[in-house]
Length: 330
Figure 1 (cartoon, helix red, strand yellow):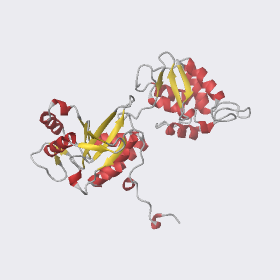
Figure 2 (spheres, one colour):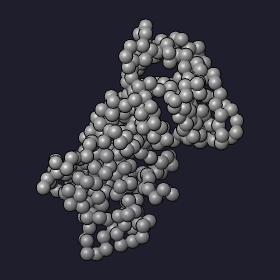
Figure 3 (cartoon, one colour):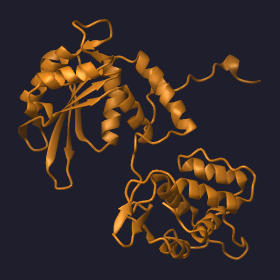
Figure 4 (cartoon, one colour):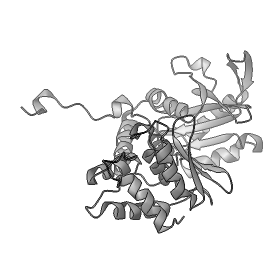
């Protein structure tokens, strides 16, 4: 997506706060270090190089707009985060929190490109494409490039998963992740009473925009899932998962919110390690066509990427250890 240079310069001036600070400015003035912090808040790695501030910001915006777009009339997610950060209501200057003056200036610049900014009920600023009336909202894209800080968090989570038990994987990683992704009534069966699991470690439900409800079961394994003839070490054999998936899809669960027993619509097979291609193919061949369409896979890379882009706090065991008293400077 390309914006006119005039538009980029106007938005850059707003980000820099290049206005007379003695005549009721509407935008925060940002020095070189503050500009770097601004773009860090937008989940990017752009660092101001000491050049003219508004020229550098304009070129940074151009680079951001050249990134992948969710749709033909939708700017890149990073640009929508930049607009939201720019219009943060806590940065209001010399006007109310709804920032009518700042919104008027931003609207005038974006109107040239066919977009209109507005505040929603959550107090965040969004962009509407005027011609199609579509709204650009940042998506948690697990396939986007990661910042340096996100790569560090990803590495810490990898180290945690290497040492975590199966219960840790479920309780500390999967449950918070699926809650963040919008699933409801997430219930872990646990591993204390195997007789009550019926092939599933977790069940949950997801409410569609039409208010229809889909039920999901999760079968989680700590290590790698493969198609070897027998289970070896931390690896799990896909034939074992096959039996558990059949139990999951065939056994009813009780939803206390509606007071009825319901069947699981879809099954997630989640592995803290790799799910080999052979294992996926074996299970696909073993299930009939109906059940095959009900099964979805998530391996370690899927967990890591989703956990990072949804900005969930790391499990306590994944955080770096606090320094000892002996390590503290005098």
